Image (cartoon, rainbow over all chains, first blue to last red; front, top):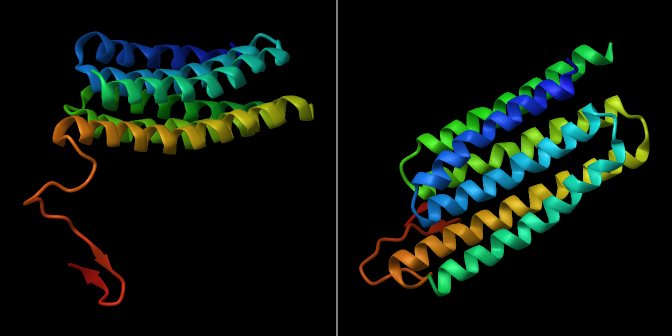
Length: 83
Length: 114
């Protein structure tokens, strides 16, 4: 097993605690877990792209890192004003 | 020579992320959980970027990795502040100190807090 795939496995495992908080927590707990999941998924996509020998697929991690910021801010704004 | 270094870099990054995710799940309040987002976005992302630079000398992949790390670092600061601000507004109705609330103000001229 390459170090990239081992890191991918551990990063995928890291999503489980986030899922637990999303399923059981309150509104802001879920938002924080969502932000953490975005970060973990960005790292996971980067390690998977390198581990599978698909270097250009790292663009997915780049796109997710940009979109995660916008998504988190939209959720924050919505919860601050309306929910 | 590179492979053991990759194991160390990626091992530290992934285990740090796992530990922070467990910490996020264990903490009782959202404001405490918020603190656990910072290490993966700064330290782990930086370590993965260094590992990508080492593994793939292609400058294009390294530049992309540096870009998403920079984005994550910036995202962490902005999103954390915005989330904490939203929590406070939901709890108190305003971002500003509420009447009767004790606020610590740092005064550099006196060298202490007032």
